[in-house]
Length: 376
Image (cartoon, rainbow, N blue to C red):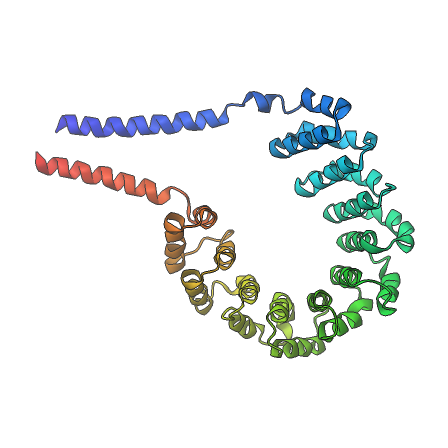
């Protein structure tokens, strides 16, 4: 009996010791971390002496390591780069890796002579919106067209600049721009909520003759202008029963909660045959997820929806709040038995990765101890 107890205690001690060593190892700074304050010399030389392909390959390496010193080096190198492919790749790097060094690149890139570089630079500006760039954009906007103009409008909307409202309203109303530019103008008014854009957003949302993307953006833009009149427009759009229109109405409907029973519309949308409609409905149910009726609906969808995107959206509702009861048990089941690694990992992050496993291990050990007692 003493031997069995000693063995059991020994196993627990070894397990705890291994756990402690693992934690200590994770806290030890690796050689790469100690050198993170200095840029990689090999990378620096690639930008000084390498071919465009070698530079682009180096950018890929920095994208993987995310070393802060290398990122700063990349930004400081940009003004001296002559190749447009490399310039564009550096800009794209800062689209994917959020870092404030991007702003120093924008200052140079929005003045570039190459249209493609400028286009990418203005879109970069929309990711790092700063009103300091407003003046430069407004100086050039009347000379811009096509995708460069689109990216300028996108940037102005992101920085909530209202300086271009009159100019863009005129361009849209005169029908002198392409559909892609109309989409960006509607997005601009959606972002700035400037009242001058409300009428064109209403018209675009209801005009079946508009290109699909223009109409969709018109619906989304109405989210900036909640009113009783616009609520009636949204109800008419829902009655059309067109999935892509319905999805976008549901997306903005929470903004209209003061004008009608929007929850009823959202609940119905969560049962729609269209995946996109259900996705937006589930997003919109975030504010109601603690209500028993809504939790039952979400639980049903979690267990019976074949769409991974739907499951992901439901799990996302609980990323910042701990689920309870049946919802907790359902998510816990996904954490251990989902066929999708993405779903499994997301579920684990919500209910805890190894809490259940640790409890089971202890129970098994205690069970083994009791069995040993009985055998003696």
